[in-house]
Image (cartoon, rainbow, N blue to C red; front, side, top):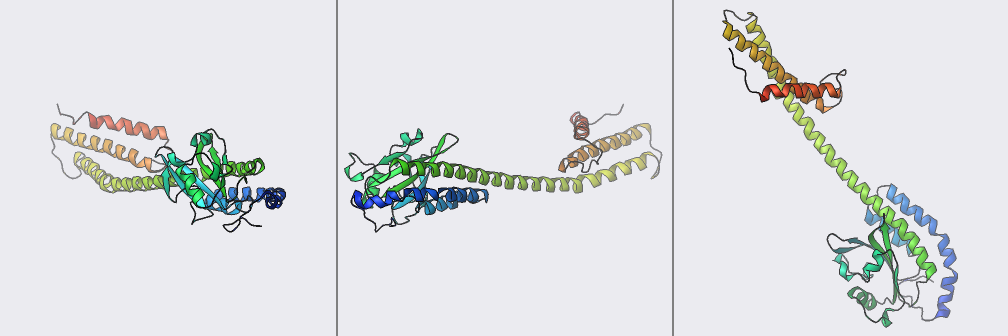
Amino acid sequence: MDYDSTTNVTNSTERGPLFQRAPRRRCARPPLLDAISKAALAGQGPHEIAQLAVSRMRRLVPGRCVCVMLFDFERDSCMLLATTAPDAPCLGPMGHCPLSAVPDIGKLLEGTCREVDDLAHAPQLTAMEQLALDAGILSYAMVPLMARGRLIGSLNLGAPDPGIYRPALLALARKIGDHLAIALRHSETDRALRQHNADLQQALMIRDQMVENVSRELRTPLTQLVRCGELLRDGVLGGGFNDEETRALTAIIEEGRALARLVDALLSLKAPGGAAGPSSTVEDRAKSFTGALPRWQRGPKTGS
């Protein structure tokens, strides 16, 4: 006897065989936990993992609806992540709703399951419970999804019959819920790491482009400037410079070499053992960079 939208068990006699088969259902629990773990390790997203869990859990526990909801306490919102009944409210509207609509969320925060045996005889219903009752759900259970001691959502079960979710079934649901919470947490962490890695790769690409631009726009002209200054000073390209003009040429050469060292230190940041040469260490490149910088902070030299 499968529990779907057409099932309507009305007395304990008819429900008897269901609970007699409960041990057989529990025997199928390890494959579900393994499937959840494999989905998380394969890099599947929270929605895919949750949908896998609710679709297979439908075979393990009785009921009309199984769904997973995620809580966002910063935005004060609740999101329906996956459900076996897309056309039913499954204890909550499709999309988002405020956390105030979640029944007895304080109990979930304490890590305690919430179960109601018969919504038709409950003294007071929340808006979410009223939606469930209107959809034909009489008994339901909410299992907290706890990750590192923090409530991240709930695993919800709904059945069209009263008194379905007994301690044995709640213990099974709790076991699955704990495993699902870990998988969802792993999936979210993996997604965040992938995004951070993509951002880092983009930053590294921008850095490399900048370094290449510096090499092309500064390093080659600096080399030519220093070389021409040396040729002029040494009289290769001419002569007859007085002392003041010679000092000016020497200053140009020295400052050009200092700027070239600064550019080399910048280029060495592109990769370890890069433009600075394999024998250069990180400390050597740092000294080169910090040693050349003050020469440009002091301003130009004046001849005497």
